[in-house]
Length: 564
Image (cartoon, rainbow, N blue to C red; front, side):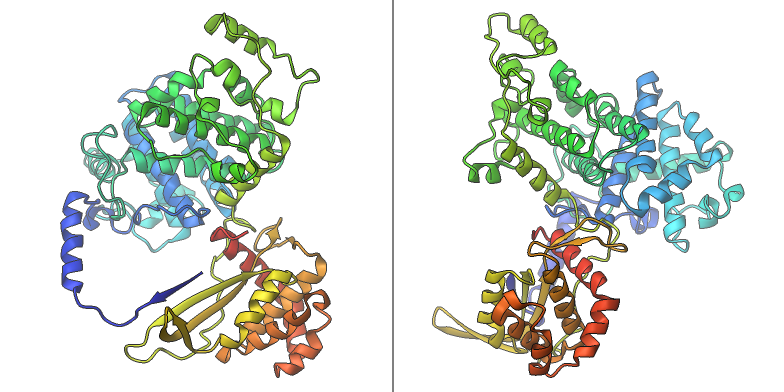
């Protein structure tokens, strides 16, 4: 991956500011005097969510759901709201689950959740929990809204629970101030059925239905990929309940109506009830999202969208059809893609179960009872692999996602361009070795190249990153490499060379030497250290003490960028 980045000042800055100012008039966020730094701009990236992106998506889901509830809640709405809130303490990945669980288990917080019977009470409850999380993570930040006189200590549920603000004790004027601020931040003028914002990257912008949909799927899919392989009964009940929340309290009325047309399909409901492992959870979320996508494609709302992961399955000679995910349709009983048949094929593939037979008899009595539609085993694993690559970062969500040594070169000269180049490799990959050997001699601070007969020059910013698997966490890695344990040893040594010998890209000489024969990595390390004028003892000591963390950091960064 490479791009030229001009670091010199440009004319037209005033014009750019004018354009931004005009755009902001079309899509204005909550004013800083009210929201402060409550939330940044909306995330559009297709890479796995970082903890910051997931956090924004989570609060978008919680606040927007509460803000669009009916004034008085019915039984299903109360139950679904509690399920949605509780999912943070049961299913949230990484350290966030422990923090949310601690806050939600507070006796006062539990009583206040039990007392939620109206939209306003739901909004105030989410407001308090969000401020409690902020107080735990950033105790010096002012609570929301910044215009209030409340102190962060009023939300310190963890270290000073007796001093927490009580929702029932809020004055009428403060309640009105908070609810008005919440509506300003989270409720879009005209409601979620209005046209989407023309520009969605304005900070503190009330979400339109596209932004809400993206946030909700981010929440569901990210929770799915970080589930334990065998979740507890409580976690399974909470996870299944998330989809009932979409049915009962999803904030967009039109979207909820479309969802209601297929969610109670008996085949889909049987698969919902059968969610018992991380794999079946991911597959159900994948199928349901494709059903929503297929519905939008079929209605003509999303003509340019595709089912996931269409491209990789086409590479295998297969193709996902919209008809496989259209529910209801005249032929959905026979064409609908089944999940339980994929993971547990019936002994007689020509038969279908009683649930499906009854459904076909009622809705399509003249239809032949054909064998169920199912992707084959190879495609099933492709779906799971692509799904995890899309939503999961190797080593978990709690990691820095920064993998760069100190700057190898000084600052660029005035007017000099900067070329950013990143190489993603595996320590013993033959093709990676050949590629690195080809470019090694060109990796210099003052980089030159010829393109279409014209010579270009720039200050080079070059980084090497490793690609592999981490079945543990960033703090406690369990690393796996494609080419075996020797590759891990080599990657530790090479990243230690990058850490200690970054100046003028000295470490590239070490990598170049190692890549002369990747089959002998890491045996060549002493020879290559000597050739690159490095202290072998320093590299070995670094590899032993810090190597696992350096490799885990590199794997996580590569995974976050979608390199696998």
